[in-house]
Length: 295
Image (tube, rainbow, N blue to C red; front, side, top):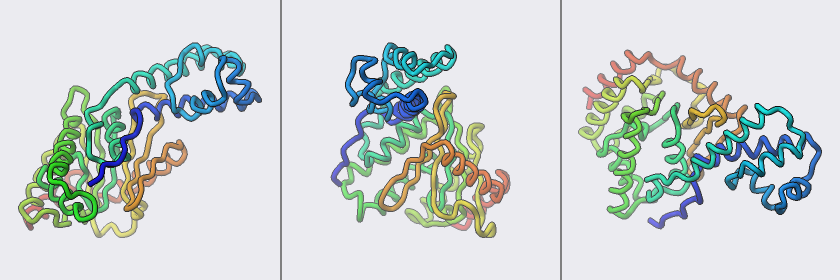
């Protein structure tokens, strides 16, 4: 497989950067200032203001202070919040993650960076076991089955499996990632790698479901129609109050990032409504065990 170019920087930082840039853009618009006027206030070019407002570059505290004064921001608490947001963004950009050597396509490497910085994820899966819960055998079988169109190098397949396993360390570290997963029953019955692989995978699901930071619910076939029928997605949340949620949506041919607050809230609503249609955690474990015995 030919590797896709890796994205510049850490997307986890640009989540914060875009939030900060949007705040500065809102202040500039409210003040009736142009980008060129803003640039002149900090002795910069208009291009720099464009990059700042789009969250493409880290921002210096002196530039933020001057711009806020130029825009007429008088509230010291609002200024302090923007400076705190800029500091968090700079810290995120300095981090070099282990995932940067991944053979994943660029967009999935971006997702792993986000997941590594997150404190909570909510994931809805239609046909596969969530990556954070996969066994190495299941992940390898999945990569091989994908190999006809995507993966054809055995070394890269093994690296792919290794990285998927490393992601799971977040479930057990000092500040474990909180995971709330809803999985359609089809994913439990989809034969990936043969009966032995699936039996071990379902045993693994039962194990991770016992972790205090994991909530796993199964949406049974009998639930019928539900809000999440169109496709799988993951909602990534961060500890910093300044950072908005990000939704990661994979399709066959592309990846969609949703960072608009209202749209993210809509995905949260879909997730919550589907959760209400799903089995309880206890009944979900019983169904998983029943299907495991069938294999």
